[in-house]
Image (cartoon, rainbow, N blue to C red; front, side, top):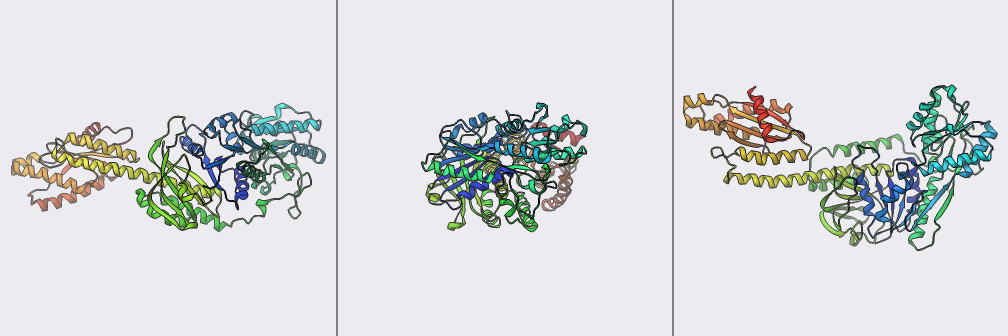
Length: 636
């Protein structure tokens, strides 16, 4: 199989990682490498129960087909420490690893290093000399949460020291790398504009700088006339903001290009340095007091020309964005129906063509794997490819079972050993159960958009998988149900189940329904005026009334509803997926069916009944208690 460079990141939604990925994919664009993007997700909040499912992507990288792993370490280390990240990466510790920016204590690991010392020195010197800055503050992130934030704070302090500026440590504010956090960090300590003791504040990233601007202007201060604000990153919105943001451009795309180059050298046996340094560059804009003339070429503070690959790129128009959102909405609508895996496979080819996905593979495990508490799942030794579309080679395999060894490769080597693509991986799971994964390539789309498409399709596959298994279990259950005709669960008069039969098979039906996230009803009924029928027409017609009631109920309810004669003229029904609001419709259908049966059975009377019902839920599923609850309602 051709060499594979895996790129491991914690989500891909930040401007930082999107720019880094741009540099990585651009480097490998015309090479013969496979590039496998694996997005994982840390459980960053208590209710996030799916993080471990995504983290299983790390285990996939153990396969022999992966030659080197580029780790987008900053995407992890804004939530966890480098030591904790190293622990997560233990399954791949013997792989060649290139870390973006953060040092990792693993075998065969090299990294890029961003040096911000000169940029901070230039910026501090500039705002002092050109804009009269005297009192400084810093909006950062606590060092134990981010090694990068610590490096930036240290470089900022050193720049002040070299410019002979005394710094008050109380003017360090701590938040997270997001707008709201910086806003709240200032708000907590500064109650009015008179409390602001600084005239210049540096922030550890651009998002935090925007948070500072938001709160300072809310206090009635002007940026930059009263307070200058400088960020770090030079994200897309920095130059286009209402007040263009002065910032430090950390050459993110170049960082991505550099880690890709190092990975290329690494896997080909070229000796690479343990650290490769990239210098960041300061760029002054209006938030620091510099006037930005868009008609002239913009310069970094060191005098070099400001190259904005983002700004020079052709931006998609509004219609293009609307088209992509329309695709997302339509794709979401397609997940609303219950369908089997076979039905889904039949329509997937059409969906993929519409989404312009030219390569797509579904891999399932032989058996689903449940995730334990705080444990990343171990992948099985083998898996099976069940679906494949490869437009480049006119290859389409639908509803197949092509087994291969996961320890050797993430795709069957026999089919894909001589091709190279830029892939994206997504796990297929439902709740705490993982069924497999998909590998997809979306061309001419942004990575975030392609990931959205793949995640939605993953959800649809997992639902179809679960629905298929429920139907298979139901088929087994129906075969079991047929056996009650010849055993003790059969009611001799009507041929329906008796009470023991319903308690056994009805309980299974409720369990399967709840597995599909469907609640339902348990109903009971007894025939009106049966004693009068017996006394007027005799017990023969009384028994015929019971038989008629059995027939009416079978015509009223669905094939998958379970009907039983539980005692005398009393019947009970388990109806999955039926809600209380359906009850009036059930009664109307019963009345209609009763008239039909009266005619078919040539009865001199109309059979009617009274109903009671109880709703089964995940918290109320004991069938015996539900029958009693329905009976109590009917008798009330």
